[in-house]
Image (cartoon, rainbow, N blue to C red; front, side, top):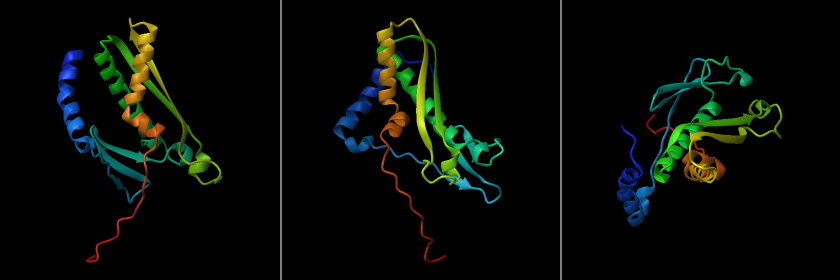
Length: 176
């Protein structure tokens, strides 16, 4: 697929924006992931766009490092989303990028995950996104580009304002 121009991107998105203004419920897009938990070892397989990813314990939690760590997968999602959003915003703004990378770093404390200390949180406690841009755009334009990329990155905004999370167990069928 070739890179659209600013006007081509607007043309692609115009009917979507009109539809969502007229029918806000149509803009509520479902997303879903399913992990198949292994009964051998400690891992789970998740089918995604690029195939199946097998996740396992991080070495800090007893893994051997041969499987994807879920925290790394979350940071991968932030980087991917921020990168796509950056590129979309750059096109919309007419900013030419010679190159760009998005670096995402996070930290977590294994004491929380391993229940060593209940006062230590479980999960990532900080996430930092760094945009590296190669462009002739002036500093103010680059700052605006990064600001908008952060503003419209779905994954980053989800972390910044966490959604309601519910956890449940599916009851077995009465016929089982």
